[in-house]
Length: 303
Image (cartoon, rainbow, N blue to C red; front, side):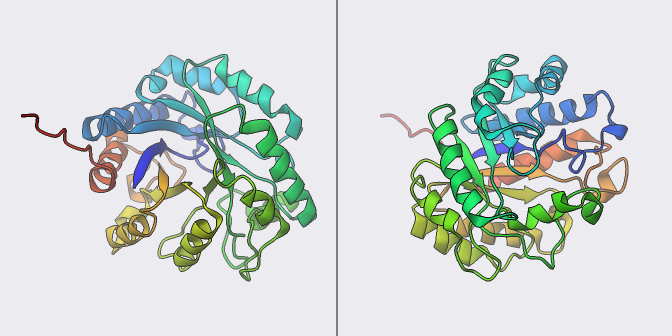
């Protein structure tokens, strides 16, 4: 059901972690180390991934390494959107991977890459094919973001929202399937690589799109899916019932579960980007989720 876990999502993006409350990244590093140890105690065979980094910053990776956080993960993952948000070109992908390989002994995966259809849907289709050409021979795992467009009546998880101008509205056009359920040209481009290219799809609490997502993933022949289990959501009423439904629906896929978002009442500040007051509480959540959905398989008794 779960074959790997990721600790946090884009921690070096201010929309997901507040560096003003953790200026030297020591709290974040301690939190990841605690979580890595906790997961290894529950299932030592589970792959532990350092949360997809955005921007791609070798100095940040070196800081986490020097704090000891990388001693408790198996993979460092990157996110990149060169046609939408990053200030570099799509053909620089191999060089960006090499920058991170130079500062860590860990394998590098790309756990979120995408091209939006904000400007033109044909650009997305071209960008998907070019991304696959550049990255599939270069790294072991690549996850395309995303299957569905973000519904326009929702909010994108960014700090400044509409004040970001077109950068904010691009969040709503990253899917291969429009909000009305119709496919874009990029879906055919993805289908050409579905046996090797994974999908990254967030599901909001109680997300009604879950059954449709499973239907599309099966139709496309997708094997690998990255999604999230929100630590903040775990304090909602019925949270574990929802997590159970989500994981049961995704049981046929190789799932990377991303653990992230601070419950406001446990943070230094009352916000999902805040460092927790007690980093071990995040580790407890990670261990509980792994114990529930990816416990270690007992060795068979030998005669």
